[in-house]
Length: 263
Image 1 (cartoon, rainbow, N blue to C red):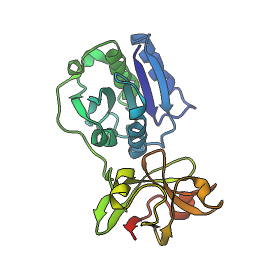
Image 2: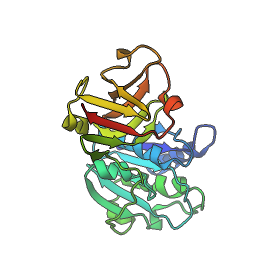
Image 3: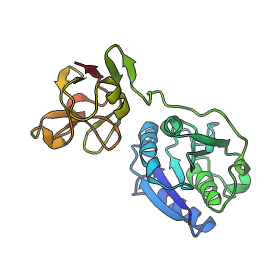
């Protein structure tokens, strides 16, 4: 049984996500469909790209991921079907594949053009239903990637770097994601922190967020009292800025400067 995941900004109050499932069920009735989320912020490609990259290691080889956050729907922007580390991605070429493309091995990448695998009537505003969902279903039925269109070597990446920049004595990071708890997830990877001075509670590391300096690098949220700011390596595998039982985004905004230095 093939697994198809859905990541969209469609929300749950409209019929859009159900339409994708209906199309998939009509073409590949044996496929297992899993909703990753339909609560991506509207038009927020970076949000969806981060979510895709984080779930990628959790699924088995052969999984097909459909991602639809598509503010350019109906324009000349391309739709891609690719294989990364044994899993498939069907998505518009607008940066959605950006973090996966950087973190996973790209084994094949094709531009979706073959209308044979689309629905008969393609709306200019609903390519998720009329192109991407049917392509994913045909993939689940065993259609080869090359059947959907020509091979390509290019993919659009995001403007924000997936990895923090190395600077003298440390790292300079950016926020790449804000979760529902208001925690700021940076592009400073755990391996980069280890290279600077160690992981986990590390007295040799100093973290600054905006004008707040000397923040502790903790193991858990409870390492500081409620209401206090902390940093830690979260489940994302990246440095996260949080407030114990509070919202870091409310204090620092969505894009504060983050510096990590060796003491």
